[in-house]
Length: 60
Ligand SMILES: [Zn+2]
Image 1 (cartoon, rainbow, N blue to C red):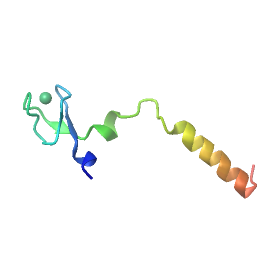
Image 2 (cartoon, rainbow, N blue to C red; image 1 turned 90 degrees about the vertical axis):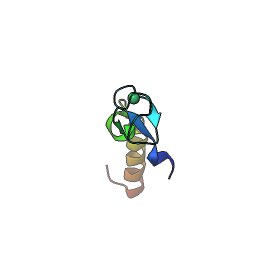
Image 3 (spheres, helix red, strand yellow; image 1 turned 90 degrees about the horizontal axis):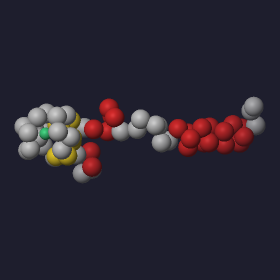
């Protein structure tokens, strides 16, 4: 619950709990959706899971 409240300043990238950056007064937004996973760390996991699911069902 607490982690979803963490925001990051668009200007200086300072992490803050407020929508206004305490350091530069810039706008702070949730950093997770926009630029958290450039490499998609769960991609391999998803592919593996997909493969396992296929094997369980016996479809090619
Ligand atoms: Zn800032």
